[in-house]
Image 1 (cartoon, rainbow, N blue to C red):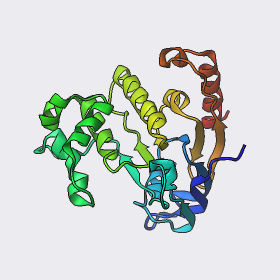
Image 2: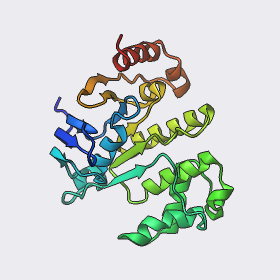
Image 3: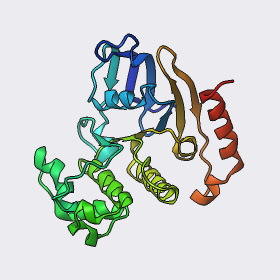
Image 4: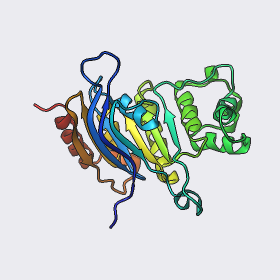
Length: 259
């Protein structure tokens, strides 16, 4: 079977910030196939968020190469010429405009860029992420933290991206809500055929959500482990307590914290 084409290819990537003696990222090579759910784990300061920003085009490389591959329109919309690669980014904080309603916050990317707002489609996006149409008229201060994060996720989907980039989006919510948001993200990944790249400190989250997990250590070590994750056809509740989940967590923990 032919492997999926790469949507991102990093070769010997290096990122320096200012006068820091040690680069934030050094000699990072990584191929990310289309349709994969990839999670990057590692200690604070190892460059996880910087790597995500490089993939998003928000951070330039100091050295090395990054190739982004356009997704054929036939994969996305049933035919035609190759489409431009579109990515949605969900940050650690929702970063919503407090004076705008949920629906108005969703309209913002369309108002700032190409495309005209279609409120019916935007209301459908709210429902896809677990919000209701009644929530559309609420301002961020009237929404819980979890609802604000769902709105941020919906905003990342406004331009119908092929890639979803997630920078620790669940770090500030409680464990119960975190599990619900995890299920929402995985469901969106599967139903939309996304390529998803998640940065997290939470090893259980990485094991549960991912098709693949890479361990990133501070420069000059870089990527020190690369795991494929077998995804069985279990319900979310069964998967969370499956023995193979705990076995993989042990492997991941050993790779992250070698004795």
